[in-house]
Image (cartoon, rainbow, N blue to C red; front, side, top):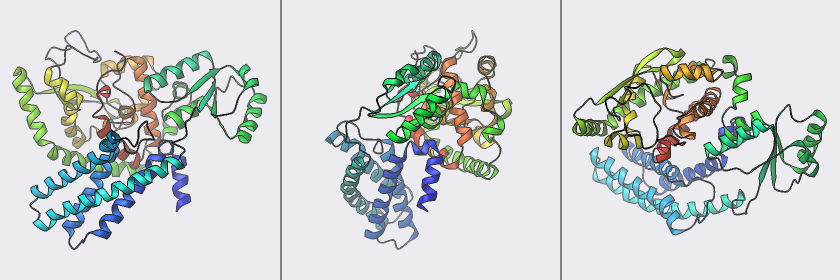
Length: 450
């Protein structure tokens, strides 16, 4: 079983890069489950449901508040403990308390919440201990000056530097030409990124032998994007991506499950968020007494068109001079629009499009035909992103801030095609969790280059 799990993790680079968080999350789940089911009496179904909800909420909130991030400065400071441990516990307790009252559970069930609160503080103590040992095991306390060496052409070097800066990926890369290899220092070296047409066979063979001896990686630029950055490089997209390679329609069973989840979850979310939808409707109407919803043509599967529905966040005549990308401090956005965009509330009506089958919860974002027409001419294989049902959120949306340029579109295409290639229900679940987390990050709501 362990070998099967390890093989699965290693074959999915997005999981491999997050194995620390995954292992730590599993340990938390085991601690919570053991404490809850060993200390509490589960004599009816309602008690089991309450405990399950409480554990699930705690785990999700731990993730949102950053508990599963790698070691940061002052990890064990009072402020960090409050943010990453106590806040999730208190919020979980309050939410379960509210759920019990709203669903008219009896007083016996109400008392369980207080028992769960006591268990949570015991779990907090055990969590701090396990956190310490995991940080030691992963060498997180050791001061690191580890780095990569990139042997690339000038164009590839600039492109990689630009993308890493835009993505905000924390990584140390030194850029050199192959003459540097004569004086290569392997201390603290993670690996060498190379371009296939830069290194000749003899130098590559020497480096390969050295990498085995000194235990550092040697990886070509396309695989670096794939395995480390979890997106496809522009060169890879232009030269090697094909419909067959992406396996778009080869996983019918998972696609069927995905569609069932879309229908169930979008229906549930419309019910859960109905008070917010009603409140937003009233606010938009009060602000300027004009239309509440905004309908716009977008591309869906196979580049057919449909009308997307959103809460209106801009003035009525915002695009009288033609379609434009939004920008930071955009004067066309209303006061209510600023708020609902920040927390993605304007996207909620799109759940109707999910129910209709025009969209999915997870997938590449649908773009406007006018913008797609330009991008199709400028970006090779851009149309491949529409071989998959578009989504309200997606791999590009949770990994990259709001796009508003041709370069942004190229990077997002790399993420979209990576998602299509690596699609699984587990990846969809991770994107949903990360979507909740990034909703509270304002830089994901606006373009990052303005």
